[in-house]
Image (cartoon, rainbow, N blue to C red; front, side):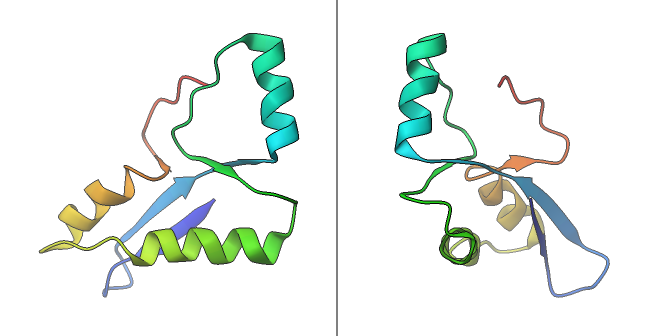
Length: 87
């Protein structure tokens, strides 16, 4: 879960990510056939510092004219608080 905010303290979006290794992803594909990928972060290992750094980089690259535009872009990389994930 990532909590990302604008310049004001009262504005924030929460983003959820599912982190897995290629081996685990392969076992999921073997088990269920198709795995949806929205909000999916595939990591070589469970190195939490590397995973956090990667998510931070993805979040910091999102730009927009205002917070609403940035929040819309954030929804493209993670599962937003009120999204209804299918997986």
